Image (cartoon, rainbow, N blue to C red; front, side):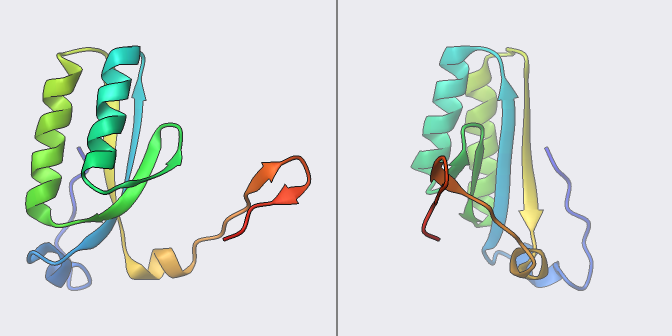
Length: 107
């Protein structure tokens, strides 16, 4: 689990406001991986890669989601990370995406 340092920049975000998060994982067990993906979707996160989701989560839902993920893993080998993304980082985000060879994806 990622720990967020309390700084003046993110103090308001930690006070119950929503913040964008990136959730990524490396899970070898197929059933556990499917359960974690379903949980991410259930919590409104958008799948951006096979093992990567992002979206807005209030603090209470972050804790709840991570608890359910822990239960779904049943002590199987896994690495799950919930990474906060600040507005500044999101504004600087770059993306290259293709649906198929040579055809750009609409953003």
